[in-house]
Image 1 (cartoon, rainbow, N blue to C red):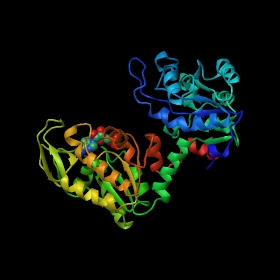
Image 2: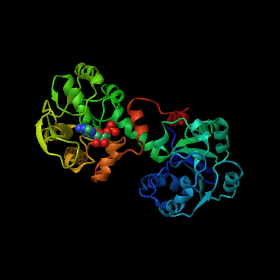
Image 3: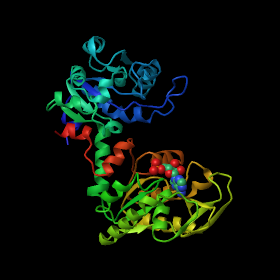
Image 4: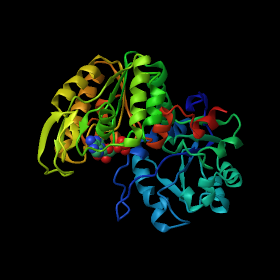
Length: 395
Ligand code: AMP
């Protein structure tokens, strides 16, 4: 795997695809700068080598060149984080961009305007990618969040750099973390899958059954499995058309010697509301009019026991409706268990959408081994797919 350390950037211009798709408030202030901070090590290494950086990214989903999606709004934030005054080019291709790149000196950083002001970016247009390729000597991809897209800047542009392309530190770290879980991790390996629906996780479950020793299934998915086995789930969320699939997963797991752990008790509520009445009931005996919105104490203890004996842990998806404090306790308890296991030497990876939000919200970010920066990219990696942005560098 070619990474930054295989290159010396002295007097070179690095064209870096970063993921600066950060949230902004109505005054265009960056409200979460994690993605910019995550790209810093790559940028600093290139500057310290004596090179310069041309940063390209998308921001939001603009329809054409819309000022509210301009990357000019984040120039100050990027400058502050890097400790370098960042220049800005009001276009990402053509004369303006080429002139700004030509004027760039070693040690300097240039941020290009939003790539998605051009429809050619998401279309993966080859001519547009070729125009981008004129803006650097070496192409560096450090944007895991878009690595599952065959866009011009994430994938197509790589073909114009032959040997002169590599992963940035962040993307390399993402790849290594996933490999650690799916291929090289110390046993026993545990995957925890929560969230709302079986249907959105099914390909992941099928892919990881060959790789893990234990699988905890929690969250709303639980009830499709419980009902499929004849349990009473009251008004809990359920995908009836996935019940057969759920039984098949249980059968496959048995054949593959994977131990599946489902909640044994749940916090049931008489409404989908933080102020609803609640009772803890057996996961297979939920009364009509009640819905399971979190796992109960017994389940938390069982999960804690499983987590504590595993050496490699993947967590995707909350164990309950964590957005409502009344039903966040199972997810918090799991976070604590994983933090403890990590302290005792286990490798833990958290990734994919809502579990990342939960980990940040409850302060577990620094207590797990790695929090992935990519939602869709992470899920597709876990499904066993080779991401186009990664394949383009390896080619
Ligand atoms: P996902 O995006 O598939 O990881 O799903 C995350 C969502 O699942 C969160 O918004 C949770 O509120 C929701 N969720 C978790 N447990 C339950 C449950 N028991 N019933 C309904 N929704 C749930």
